[in-house]
Image (cartoon, rainbow, N blue to C red):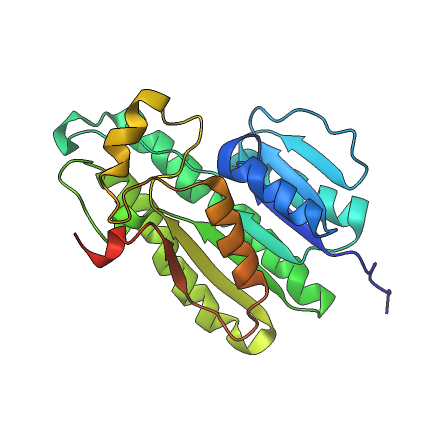
Amino acid sequence: MTTLPKQKVAVITGASRGIGAALVAGFRKRGWAVVANSRSIEPSSDPDLVTVAGDIAAAADEVVDTAVRRFGRIDTLVNNAGVFVAKPFTDYTAADFANAVRVNLEGFFPVTQRAVAQMLAQGTGGHVVQVTTSLVDHANSNVPSVLASLTKGGLQAATKSLAIEYAGRGVRVNAVSPGIIETPMHAPETHAALAELHPVGRIGDTSDIVDAVLFLEDAPFVTGEILHVDGGQSAGH
């Protein structure tokens, strides 16, 4: 039996900016090797950080193969890639629908399937984390978001199903469900209004999501959890 390298390895999608870039930095700070993917990600000079550019729905095989070829294992997959388009339901176009499904669902499926298979083959177990949205559980008439709820809600349902399917085989599956996080997606002039959507009166920081993912990484008895990191948004107003 081949001896696995000791250094743990995380695969992170949607990793070029915002939450994804912060997750890459968080895992590297812990000494993990990282394979980072996004459509626009730049090459890395860090020998323990390999980037794979491309739409994850098409690049899943390359991402997983790169992790195994370069680092010899996969311990954690963070499905962070996602798109969010807030429109009234009747204003969504066929292109909006296709884009949301492709990035949020079609991107999740192949890379998760390949990563879980690799974790099982290693015999070491592993961890899969989806980044979803608190709006799945707490709809808000001020933020019409059916496509996000449809697709990211699907990921939350899949999280629980996969957690139970693999609970006895050492692979844990969880999700982090953020409120609105300060990223380049949100212009600074919108921050004050967005803060009002959260009972704590502010929007979140990328470090809040990194802390949540790393908490789940350190919680071996937690699987099937949807961890809300949303300033109380999902609890009510």
